Image (cartoon, rainbow, N blue to C red; front, side, top):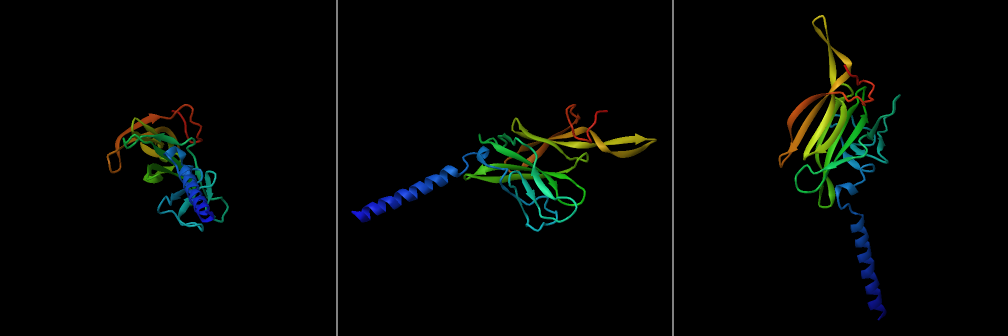
Length: 206
């Protein structure tokens, strides 16, 4: 009798543990905590920091461990994260954008698109933007099953027949990407004026 009772208690304990594990697993991409998440190393050609080639965010930030005058970090910049169905399967994908201060003076952005696969987030696509006014990140969203990315377009001043690239931007390059079953493919590009509410120090209206 005591042996039977012990067996029942062990079975209940195993079932309870399995239930707790299943309940903690993300049921959709919105359940994934991207503020505390491990990303693939990107940009791929960036120097490897002392902590290794993984981006491990804690509370939306990662200190790479570089020693120098300026702190080198990755940080989550598109909060709230954008969601939408890109692949047409009825389930949402997530667009996660990280800002970087990792080497030299450049400040590229990194755009990750994640989908759910077997109850786990899976990287669908990654993209690196330019630096601030020079094709740097302005926005990313999902609209009508298309990924829309906006980057700052550098302002070119023509003076006495010569072109001069200024450290500013008066317009965005807006690219549209569509999932073709294998990858995201660019289908359209627009040039649109800088938004009047844009507070980036390099953004200005002509």
